[in-house]
Image (cartoon, rainbow, N blue to C red):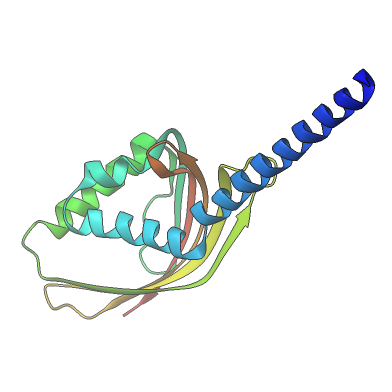
Amino acid sequence: MGTAAAGEGVKKLLLLLIVVAAAYGLTSYRWFSKDSVNAFLDLNYELSKKGDAAGACGMATDDMEFSLHQTGGSTGTPLDGGKKEYCGLAAITARLYTSGAQISDSYTRDNLQVKHDLLHWGMARVSFTEHHHLSINGSPDQESETEEELTLVHEDVGLRVRRWAVRETLLGR
C-alpha cells in the first residue's frame, strides 16, 4: 500500500511540474510575441524622439552589448561597446529631436522574426529590417536600411535588451 501511495505522489508531482512548465512556456511566448516585440521597439524609438534618453537607456540591461556599423554614403566610425555607448547614442538622438530642428522621420519594419530560446524561457533572439526616410530642416530625404539583431530578456520590469547589433546601409538621397 505504501508503494502505491508513493507512486501516486510521484505522478502528481510530475503532473504539477508539467503544468508549471507549460504555463511558464506559454507566458514566455506571450512576452515575446511579435506584437509585444514590435511595441517594445516602437516605444524605444518614441522615447528617443521625445527626448527621453534615460527612458530608452533604461530599456537595456547593465551588461548590454551594442554595435552599430554603417556602409554607403559618408559612414561614421563603427561603434562597438556596451550600455554606455548605447546610452550615449540615445542621448545624441534625443538631443537632435529636441533641438528645435524640423525633423521628418518615417520608417517601416519588415521581416520581424522572433526565435524563442527553449533553454532560457526568459530570452528570445529577434531580427528585422527597417527602412528609414529622414529629413532635417527640409533637406532632401536621407534613406537608410538597417539589419538589426537583438537578444531580449524578460525581467521583473518587462522586456530589456541584452544585445543589439545594427548594420546600417546609407542609401543616399
